[in-house]
Image (cartoon, rainbow, N blue to C red; front, top):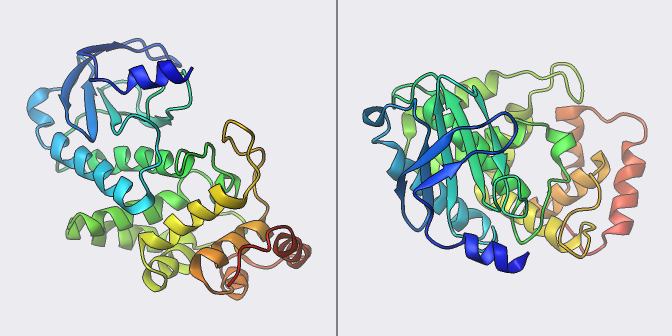
Length: 279
């Protein structure tokens, strides 16, 4: 297995036959450097994607600098782009044979014009899942059932756009994310406005989540292969985030998410189970 992963760290192949889910396209390598490999399906118009190489390369280069370079033996993100099929996107991780042991962002849009706000945002969202699920030599996302598919992604995308100097895009997503309301963990929750943006603003921007992921890798249960063995509960999530922020965030969590019966007991158990996390 390890030899196979090391082999996959070589130069990206010129073609790549999809064999995952319902994907069956023969992809062709459009661009590669030490940070990314960009593959296109036959429907993508090359003249629409000239902006992609510097963007995807900078996204992954920044992500490794901000969140630690512990994303497997291959330094690249494999960014796959479809046009007119496979709408939306999914991520893949270097520990899995599904995408041949690569960290992957696989996205489909009708077109890939740079002016479409989804064109940079969709692959950023999927790359954020790799940051979430394959960092620090650990595998999986114990907080996924706490924040779901898109709430951590809002933090990641806003920080990314800010760091890359994409000021207009950062302002646009800040407005949208601030206005978002979700029905979890209670109706009307404002994840970005009341939780993730204050964390970003007050606790070191990307550094606070880099510390969060490092604490998970250091303390949360994993098997011998580095895969997390379970998901977090809310008390554990508040405890680990407080450790990353170096401040007790239980009051802020109560304001943002509510504090139903049992959560205080979860938090106390987490403090007892993970005493190395202090704040």
